[in-house]
Image (cartoon, rainbow, N blue to C red; front, side, top):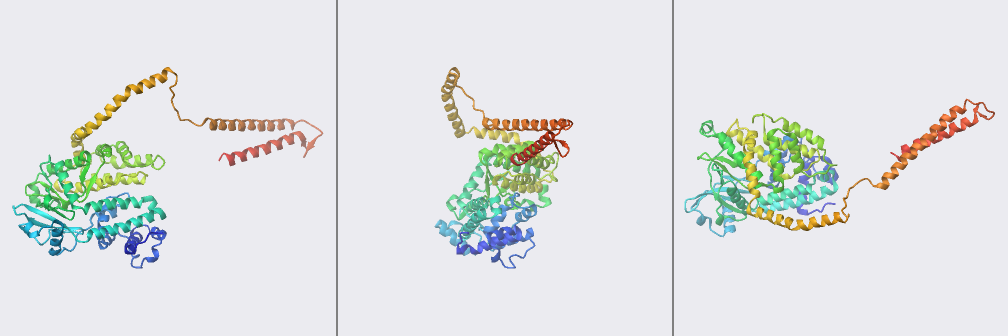
Amino acid sequence: MIKTSPTHLKRYKDVAMLFYRYGDSSVVQQAGFAADLSDEDMSSSGKADELASDLERLGPTFVKIGQLLSTRPDLLPPNYLASLSRLQDDCEPLPFDRVREVFEKELGVNIKKAFAHIDEKPLASASLGQVHRATLHGGREVAVKVQRPGVRQQVTEDLSALQELAEFLDSHTDFGKKYRTTSLVKSFRESLMRELNYEQEASQLMELRGNLSSFSRLKIPDVITDYTSTRVLVMDFLPGTKITALSGAVMADVDGDQLADELFHAYLKQILVDGFFHADPHPGNLLLTQEREIAILDLGMVGRIPRSSRDHLFHLLVGIADGDGVQATRAALALGRGTEDSVDTDELTRRVEDIVGGTRGTSLAKLNMGEIVMSVTKACADCGLLIPSEINLLGKTMLNLDRVGAALCPDFDPQKAIQRHMQSIGAAKTAETLTSSNFMGLLTDSKEFIEQLPSRMNRIFDMVADNRLRFKVDAIDEATLMQGLQKIANRITLGLILAALIVGSAMLAKIETSFTLMGYPGIAIIFFLVAGVGAIALLGRILIHDR
């Protein structure tokens, strides 16, 4: 039975409703929740747009989970992914008195003393927090992000309920065992708790500023650390216009191709060199400033690629850009988790070649790098290869980048951009491995290897001189092999004896004798009977014991 908590019962029912309407109703039956659902809960056509509406109705936790699910083509079909990617995170604005209360409680300073002016009307109001424009006493324009009161507690409670459900589903349903729902909820928890910690977002903003300092056309807001806490974040205000909302007159004055190329180059560096990338570059988070630069906002959602995975990801993207399905498949196999028995390698290779092979010479109008990456991860999941969630998040990131690139320059080609920048990215990756800390690690490992090499070589030569060097070779067990050969020899011998009896019987049947059975020579009939019984016995043994 599920470990029920009275405060979580409503959330259990909400999740059961979602499964019944949009997923597999058998999961609800197996979990024993069907009796708790009303006719209204079970009445739905299961349309993707209705799923987005239901998640918005269930509150901030489910909106955020829906946004994360929109990065998982291995879990949802394309129409649901498209709908969830448009999930709205807009909410009724908090009264300014509540904003003031949170700010002053967190920082211990009167909001009127902290700022020369602050607009009481928010620039944006979302489920987790809202943003106000303000001016510091020195005249610096800033954006003030304040978390909604009680939202952390609500999200924590919702995640606890989902964790209990996931553990139950993993133990009692086929769905849970297949999709490892406990692991899914764990990744959701990590992402949401990061987004609720504004100090962590501030740290991520500063890290990204440092990583992209060489890209002159990209701007990341600086953080006012004195006015930042876990629930308050104050940073530079960067005014601008959504790239997808730019007028034709503005675009005529913008070098869209150069901007798109620099943006794409910057994201390749984030992903393949730094292993840390801004994972939510939708049009609302990428603005064109008056200086014709791109402002990158909102570091709540980020991705991190382990060093061990970056080389494989590098080869995956190169394989996609070059239309080389074999290289892309090898890279995907290196990135994923699976066994020889669980992964259908031949089918995966065929599907990836079909996906990637069609990219040769294709313009942006037909080529969408994000869709290709997500299609490859979907093929991996279908063929039994588990791809890390960060790679799925990368696919969604590139999907958004494709749209921004198309808005800046309809002729921009991500495929050529990858090919153009991979040499410099490769050089940067090499330089990154030779940083002082990494280089010292290599020196330490090399020193240990060199110190131990003479003694190891001496031991090997001593063993050769004493005739003690042995090589271990795994082969078929000798006893089992001999037993099988003996069985084969016995069957052949018995078959020859039966054949001899049949031939002998046929020859004896022509000889006249006083001893007859059914009008035929008796000895011939006896040989025929013995041969027949032996043949039946041999056939039965083969069918029963050798199956």
